[in-house]
Length: 200
Image (cartoon, rainbow, N blue to C red):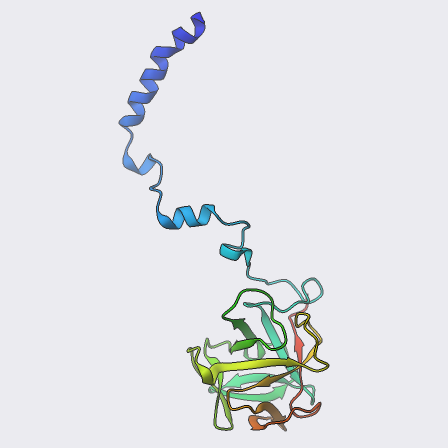
């Protein structure tokens, strides 16, 4: 007990010196953002979702925020040039990379309404039969229903053949290098797109 009493003046000195410290060394102010961050359940932020830069071999499930590529029946990947969508090259380059997201949390499933964002930050949209990437908006023109060949309810994964149905009820189709939305029915050929992710 004697040692504890001997340390008491030292404790008082430490407390008094802490009061004289500059405010830059004081503890940060606790704001609503700090409280929300402390409630996170993982490093991914609210909801536990983390941005995924993992290769297809490690993370085959497609989730919001993922970078994906769409390969047409011709073997060429969709790309954006001068705000127009084409299928011209078999390449995993910047112009062929698309971000995918949706308004709800969780991985992408058949029947989800998704938004496809090009490398320029503009979302792919359908206006009439024309497919372009000209606006960052998330409106009806930029919304697609993702459908999987063979159906099912499990998440979309790398290698799945999918169809993108626009707000017009027509599916994206590829003829030559041109990408349009001209036909209501889906078929394996012109409408089919294979989902790919960057490899290691």
